[in-house]
Amino acid sequence: MTTTDADRAPAPAASDPSPPRTRKDWFTALLRRLHFFAGVLVGPFILVAALSGALYAITPTLDRIVYAHELTAPSTAAPLPLADQIVAAERYVGGDVSPVAVRPAPEPGTTTRVMFADPSLGESETRAVFVDPGSAEIRGDLTAYGTSGALPVRTWVSDLHRTLHLGEPGRWYSELAASWLGIVALAGLGLWVGRMRRARRGRADLVRPNRSHTGYRGLFGWHASIGVWVVLGAVFLSATGITWSAFAGANVADLRAAVGGGTPALSTSLEGEAGAGGEHAHHGAVTAAPTGAANPATFDAVLAIAQRINVNTGQVEIKPPSAAGKAWVVQEIQRSFPTEVDAVAIDGSTMQVTDRIDFAAFPLLAKLSRWGIDTHMGSMFGLANQLVLFVLALGIAALVVLGYAMWWRRRPTSGVAAPPARGALRGAPWWGIGLVLLAAVGLGILLPFVGYTLAVFVVLDILIGLLRRRAAVR
View 1 (cartoon, rainbow, N blue to C red):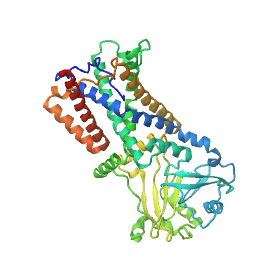
View 2: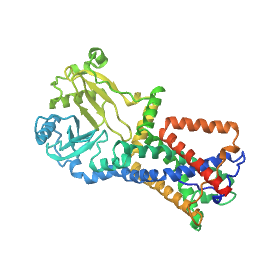
View 3: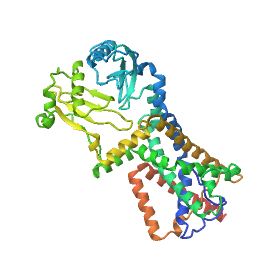
View 4: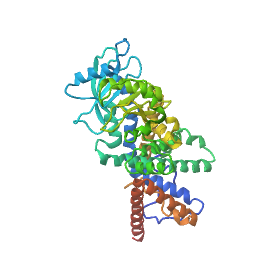
């Protein structure tokens, strides 16, 4: 449950002093105030992230529709060697160019991507030339982004979702939304549980909306019932979204590495390669392959070696050495279930395997991170995954809108609705205050944008209290 307070008594007048809280309900009062302030102040960011996220969830399907010509291959002939397909792409591009990566057609009826660097493109972007593997016909020429290979439509929506097309500063909005979404959702869940425990009748209205209710009560019913169905999904999107953030994401990565849950990295350095080849060196001895960093025929050779090591899926990316003293890399890029991200590094001169990584050997935290990210992106379970994300994102957006509508309904004749009463911690036991402070400090360190905005909430709370005391004196 996101946005505003859904479980409080009618708003007190602005002149009312802050009422004391009993020790029994201090935590509920604290959740209520947190849910209100975070919802009202962070709600707009969550709304934008939810709506753009709903659109992003269906972009893999949109890509396949919009770029059907580039992605499909009409030829039914047997695939040509990668070398022939690469040469055709190089001739099409013209000039003295070599591919920086090649993605062979993953299955019959699809195209091969031959990817070139282009100084006019942005970071992580490449020029992708689509080749019919059976005829070497050029089917298209598009800009692709990142490991996902996102094409222009998906890339545009992705950048809207991540940065609002504002560049690096725009990432702050998405980090703020991701950081607070889970906290507000859990606070709302706590209020929902408390309401269920206290309710003697009408509990069903907290699980599904009662259409006979109108006004504030009707809005609350929709807010509570939608919230309880999407709360776990909201927490999941928050947790996985944080991994992409600039500041909290770095903290999460450091924490994972500290507990041995980091993602293994493939070494492409050829220094000391004689020892690195180890038990896999014999795989190169049976392949008389040409050398040269970007020789088209070498792509076929290194792929054949990798397929004998641990590459067993059609979704593969082959990268030539990025610099002198570096190895070729063949990596699985299958993000759907079952996850396939095995990779092999190969010396292009000796055709020996110098390093490998296997997803099966990843630490559990690294596997969970991979699965979580791929599910968040809608690629893990295909169309079903995308539809669930689409509905979930719309549900979160609806909660924000309903929360603001409830807030507006509760406003006095003039002005806006007052926040829930202050003083929640005054009735809390010492250990409760200690736990709240520890949680606030811990969250502020792990999620810096939560720390910053919590400080803003505290300042606002103090100012509101001072204003209300001054009004009471008058």
